[in-house]
Length: 379
Image (cartoon, rainbow, N blue to C red; front, side):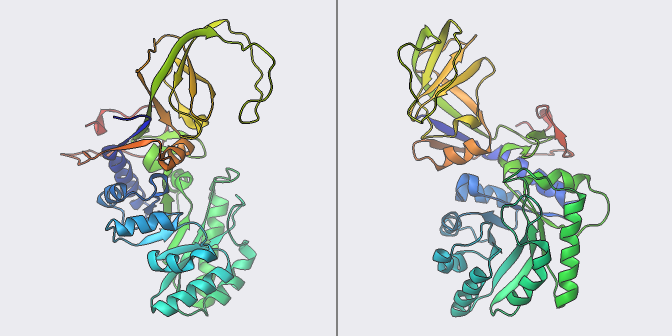
């Protein structure tokens, strides 16, 4: 096997997706799994569909095209505002798109009319995180124009949380989204099928919220693949946090000083670190670098510390484990590391397909926690 290598455990991904879908269904909220972290890989798409997904979402048209060409037939949602330069492909490959610009929807309408098909749109509303979205006071006027466009179906409204400034969903902003849905339906005499209230960061709000709400959909990626909530970075009880791991190989192991000598300038990335003399250390270099993965998203074993990195080298210091040339080190990953490693052609991907669940899984309630998963879901 070549390294560095991502191990992708389809059993654990299947388990996480199925449990999230089942638990949110009890709250009348559907889950649209987001496949961007695995670049729309058809293997993962099939695992998610087998786990209960009836629609998949991605931020890149190319990933959705990959799924279509891989035989994935469920509806697909583009969750980044379409680029005008890709409108033809967007209409050809995507059933629903998230939108904030009238000019873009006009072009979606034009191409959909040419192809004699209907294209669904979800109008995104700005609720505080200041990424994409129309200001709430402008939504009615915006829809008044969109509703006149041919071959466009307004499927619903949505919002995004936590991605830019970490603004979390709460009763206030979710109530505003619900009120907007009611107002749109009353004003235009239409029914909104989808009220999509964010991503993995909204899971705990949905599970904890008591009382009525119009929210009926979440777009979920991180919780499925990493088992945690983005805002708090806490594990969700019952989910695996190690469905995806990264392994790299040691190419040098030496005892060296911890403090460099000679005149120091900035490193290759324009950085100049403040260093302290820690004496002689046990140092290992791994064949893994910034060109392969977002280094800050790596979680090394407990007795190892990442002390530095360059384009192609990762430097570890070890306190207990003896690392020798040729030995492998396995890392946990956060979402930034998964995205970057999946996107790197230098990182090999190994899909472990044995994900079928035999016998009874029992019932696990989702919630925020930091403990490891228990034996109930082990295979």
